[in-house]
Length: 122
Image (tube, rainbow, N blue to C red; front, top):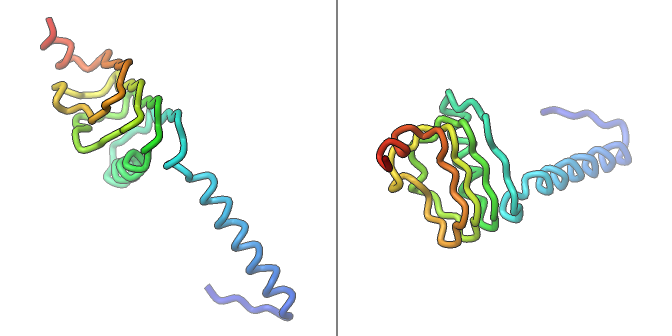
């Protein structure tokens, strides 16, 4: 980007505004400190969406409740959620319990609509 400022004051004002936007973005995207997250219905048809969700999930180190309903998820075994107590992965395509993430504090798990898992339990 090329910016032309007619005065030093304009330049300082612009720099201050850029810094404010960056600070706001950091506050909005503070995934490491959230405790409840709902990322359901993300239409994960493309690689970009899948990569963005994966990047976000890896940051959820303090998350206690996570909803990922209907996201075409099939394998979450490469994720670890040390504080997670509730996981809702209903309406995905998880075919085995071994495809679930590591969640040492998990108390509530919803796998409704993952037909392969439901059929194996029967």
